[in-house]
Image 1 (cartoon, rainbow over the protein chains, first blue to last red):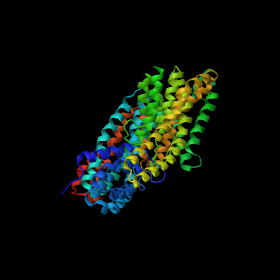
Image 2: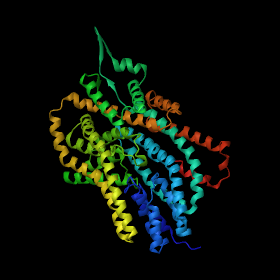
Image 3: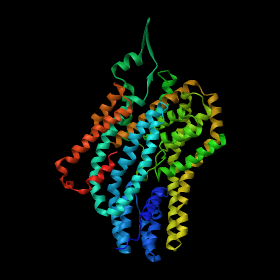
Image 4: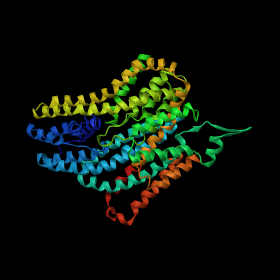
Length: 266
Length: 266
């Protein structure tokens, strides 16, 4: 059996795709052109004839969109199919890509664009508020580690093809749920530690001074106001009556008004 | 020195969008941008506090499936730059960063949409070149895509770098204290938006108990966030193992691909 592509070609295709990923993103075929850019060098080796090459390029120009990290698996497997069967495989490749990009995006987007930045973002932002860059540095190191991991994903896709990609899906959904559990614990911790509201008013009857924040609110529950605010904003967003941008400006206006009357202090 | 700093900041703004949409090493997450800006500007403390604030606002904001979101990384970038240039204490810096950063971050939505629209033409031109057999030209045309995205963040940054300092300094001289205080308070309240947004996309109702555990650990027991994430990880790990070994998942038993999945247990 003659292998046309070597390890170097695969890594090159992986790098080219990973660099371009969403950088030619458009509303028509979304990541399509980036896929073409990523695979074109390898495809040229597979198809020496211009006509075949064009047919394959046009096939990859079609609509493609999934979590870019997960796409590596699909594109690796696509290359393996085209290397084996040439132009005859184009329909299979297209069906495989469109069939898998939905499920992979469902899991991948949650895992990579929601949970990972939630956990790392919470930790590093919390440290950041104290002027400490350690969290951000850890995040940077993890990203570099994952870059190598994504190279590996591409060659896993290339070497094991369709079977594994489907089998992995089931496992990943349990993993996503577990990551949500960890994520929510961290988010719960964020509410009292990063949302800060301090009431500056002081009750005064005769000689007795009663600072509202320290003597009343903190006695009921620590971070009572941040918890309430979280609940209110959560309901507001869920009701979809106000856009998030409007809510942001509302909070800024509220803070300015409360600051003017001295109700909240820095 | 100031010119080199300005140039580096503009360069970073060009790179951050390309990296976020491609390699994902430095990313555009505010706290990561703050890390680099802290180095460039030589004031890690201020950069981290501002970056942390924007990072928390950005939680739960994911540009999934080609949607356009406020560019909080860009907000942090110009916010930190202008704040360090114009203010001398952390509360003022927070206020200035918020006032400058939020509008610029919002502008990021429109700029992103424009970039994606323009890229439709880039794709068409590239595909046309491919069909004419001009593959080298196709390859060159692809590079216009990242150029457009890079400029979509570099242009507003350049404007802020060139004009921001002077304008903000002028405005600061006649701004009343309650106003800058109010912005600073808003900065401490706004993380709530990111948290609330995150709760919409995560299974918050299903795992409400985790949210409460996190809240109590941080609010009442004052455990640092890293410790809380370890507790969260412990529970998630237990959940993952129980679920994976449950008899209902008999389909995967005895499967050799079982080992591969462990790569994900970071």
